[in-house]
Length: 384
Image (cartoon, rainbow, N blue to C red; front, side):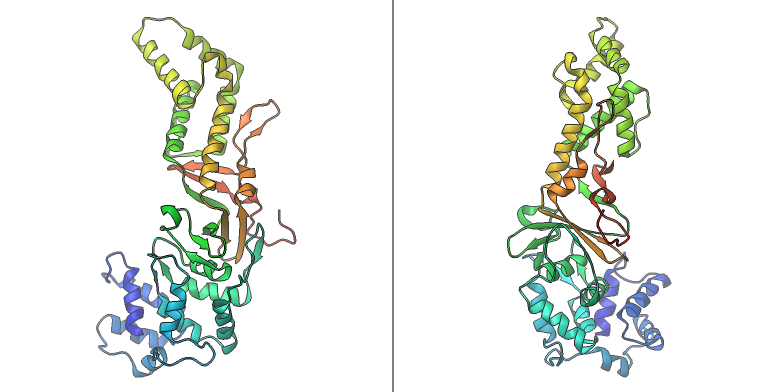
């Protein structure tokens, strides 16, 4: 078992093997998280990893090495049986590492906790219902969550996906979900519903990359806004406030009148001709403005198109789940409830603006405000 832990540790190192003293600090953290050894025994194990001790301390080995054929009385599974059970919680082709470490962590719990985890694994009934609500993760669910987060590695995924699969009776999909959809983290066994799971400390969430055409569309709008308003292009990130400020400027009658007059201008100056063609290319092709007479619809068309891109992104799954780290709260939201906050709004002047749930667009990705879909870092009597 000691050697397995050391092997797991090396997976976490950039080079795959220790190259500096700080790498052994990572090993110390792993051993301390396991909560199986005294500090003196941890020191000995680190020396062993450095090659100073060829063999582990007999007492340490005795407490951490388990005969796979011996069934712990409370838990009731051998290590091999347990590995098969965990394998049943993943889609074909997915890889989950650290199952042996999770097994060790479970059978060092109290008999009551071991039995409770066994019941969770044995049951076909979800421990929590998949619905648009929130849950405080506590009791045995929290115990299981904590040890999974400390021991499990999911290829192209996150350890919380295994916890979610056990609690809601799904399968860990990670980056190899249904139809090669990289958004699906968990597939629910009962009905095939797909879940995208986010596990963050903050309530601003990265929902991932928008379609390629969305990124191009936003860049075209950014270019047009900078060109017509005299503002510098945004550097890598376009916040909702940035976009809405540009929309308000483009909504003004003076700007629209200037655009219309400039595009109708007859000129033989090549610079002006090139600039007219560039603006027309953005308006007519990228932003799909039919003609100069409908230029006053530019912001409306923009907002509706962005909504369409976001909706297609959200609809890659049926459910979005958000875990707030350290607060142990999980929020579940179906697509329609998330989409409500992404819809455009109109100000007092009737101008179309991006919806309040959008935080920013960065590197082709969509970031949303969790607070706008009722997600808070503080548990309240009622959801916002």
